[in-house]
Length: 405
Ligand SMILES: Nc1nc2c(c(=O)[nH]1)N[C@H]1C(S)=C(S)[C@@H](COP(=O)(O)OP(=O)(O)OC[C@H]3O[C@@H](n4cnc5c(N)ncnc54)[C@H](O)[C@@H]3O)O[C@H]1N2
Ligand code: MOO
Image (cartoon, rainbow, N blue to C red; front, side, top):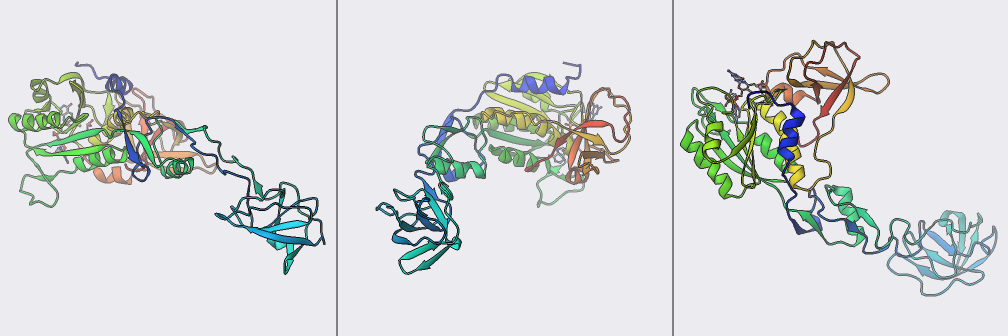
């Protein structure tokens, strides 16, 4: 367990053995951000009938020649169709979305017609099929439109509603217990003593959990005390958390107690220390069905580890098809020195060159304690282990920091 584990191997080991949570049914209005547990098929055809795309007159194209005098025999509005039939020389007033009456095969645009009492005269000839949306243009009953494993966005909710679903089968929300550790930590808003700082990491982790559709359980702050940490850890298991995230106390100092306490609590540690910067002292293990992620205390380390390991774990538990955030190609905005053996996730600005290609420029300061450059970052510039020195303009890979990060 002493060698540093490559990032991809660490992620694979975390994901291995994680299976999607069972499904539950939620009202459509509560399904934003949830992940579909089963494919979603259309319960109806849309549009259900041929309908007008414009306000105008439903006609028979053969009769609706320029200058012809057609008799308006009825009206078809959205929600109130015309029950009659359009015969030779007939027209029906029609509005957008209304069913096209039997016998009609075209819609004459209102702007292209002159109305005089119950007569209408085309100024432009109507073309067969013009301004008519055919039944099933969007989808047919029985067609599958959304796949299992898809995270539901706003567009998907509208589509699911149109398909006829009032409730959806989605994966249960993963539950993540979050424990901050450290004698120096106080909650924001509380009085800060002379040797203390404000605990910030849990807010980022809870934000990541919520953003990925999970439920955060706040275990608060435990001091650097074995019994206190152990008691808090047991609360996570009692709450049947799918994941326990600990923050801090992961390194080798005398007060870094998380690892021994987790082992004492029966957590089988899978690994400790990853070949990455920031985030080296991260550990992962399991007790029964609970995945335990021990994140380093430095704020940037904790947040980058959450992006690389907690986000994929949450997605896997939600049954998401796309578990791992993908890297994107870009170009270096400035020269970079050779990298050491740790994969580097550097806070960087993102711009675009004259050809519209993305350019990543690493910030000069990369201290993992600094939240300000992380907040300013528009992407993380990824430097592979032992990457040779590179010049501005050379290709590189970036990881985007989308909302909620
Ligand atoms: N001798 C060595 N020392 C360190 C090593 C090493 O390999 N050998 N690794 C360094 C690296 S890399 C990191 S990262 C840190 C992480 O160590 P810990 O996980 O033990 O973190 P702490 O010591 O508890 O805290 C580090 C730093 O972060 C602050 N902190 C902690 N929790 C929070 C929180 N919830 N909100 C805000 N800030 C927090 C804490 O006050 C410390 O300043 O270890 C290096 N050392
Ligand atoms: O890797 Mo630590 O995570 O440098 O700060």
